[in-house]
Image (cartoon, rainbow over all chains, first blue to last red; front, side):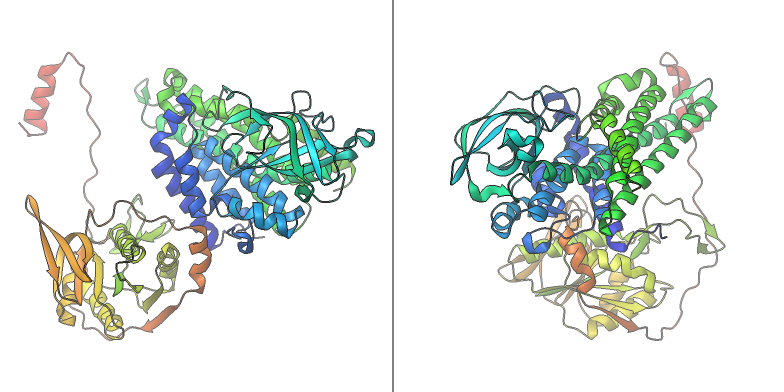
Length: 381
Length: 246
């Protein structure tokens, strides 16, 4: 056992922390209020190598380990969860998917710009009537010989407008159920793709979320990932990894709220002393610290397992379930410590509380994580 | 043109400073690149990237093996190679003498030092270095540019600035304005840092001229005193009689 980070991991954490504190803090509030996409930050983070962190340098990535990825995402999410989710989707879902399951043609054409930060990607699985039950894909991909014809609607798509590359799951053979689902790399500017309006979300308002409609969109055969019928397994495999990203994001949100609450508690006075000196406040902070530490450690364990090429499904699901739920608890308590000030925008904690809520919902709800965890328990894994 | 940046390894600027006798208590201290030196590296990188004719950026530090983390941060930012003189620096003259040995062993046109270090604020190494080497030196440097292959340096003067065209080699002690924000190292730089040359040199003998006899910490700042918005007279009295500012 070794709880020490390497020099490189520390340096990455510091780089992410410096970027978040110096740059993201400047406009995080305005972007949240007006739902503005963080274009300049995405560009800068791409140049620094954060958008292709774990991708092999051979394909334009930075070749970092998953532990470094957890550290970087956590730091960014302390300040700005929207930027963190953009980075998470790009890394853990899109890049990982193409690098692991794509072929060299696909890697060269699509992965390279995603990994070197010149483009971003989106992952299109959810549908209006297929959320937690992702097997019920209504989007169809009809095999037309040398191409597939895509029709249907995808919902809640992060990066939908800003991405240039989509990973789309669609049903090719309904008679085979989820074994008839395929995954495709689809260029966003393909004829027949239209976007629904920008979703006016409760939190993470700086990330762009839309529904995406496909009407007779032609996708070349060479853009299918893996063997025919691999799509569902592909999506599930990606989500198993994606969870580490969202778990880290949730941990960061909680951590950011805790830091703000600690600072405030040592400034604000009530009954003649800083409120930190009241046990009711100090104990809240102590509980927050335990929760954040636990969540962070779960993320790091899942990341370590992945880096060791060991099965991380249960650890990642535990990390996501726990981190998302404590993010909600910790941010709620942080607002409570701030009192009335916590309820107004100026003090940031209400934004963190709004952001925390989404981590319990997307990339597998907390309830879905419990299904994953309990099934892994039955398998003795 | 080759640039050498002298780097100090200093405690993070938010460190709670505690001394045991004359020794800084280092437990829990996070060590960083001295902020002025970090800006000097940043400016050197900007000059190199602008195509103004910078061939190589070298980092030099005087410190024990623990300072290599700080040195590698500079390499991760983009410097090409580094030297570490293996000694725990005792005072500014010791440091300047060791750095001079590094410089004599190489070929550098511009030597940058931070105006002061964030730990002991000696403001001496740059001046001593130029004296030992017999190089010209410019202090309070707020900008370094290369114009038509020649070095142009802005120096802060009272209420304005002086623009100097200087002969190389030269020692410049840089301060505010030299670069806006320190460069954040990119992932690729972080991965490459360990593969860049870091040469360790033995220290030379230096006569000891100074000895720290005592360290006295500044008095803790007193708490903010609040006045009721109505109590103007109370505020005026306190400013007059307690703070003695009016």
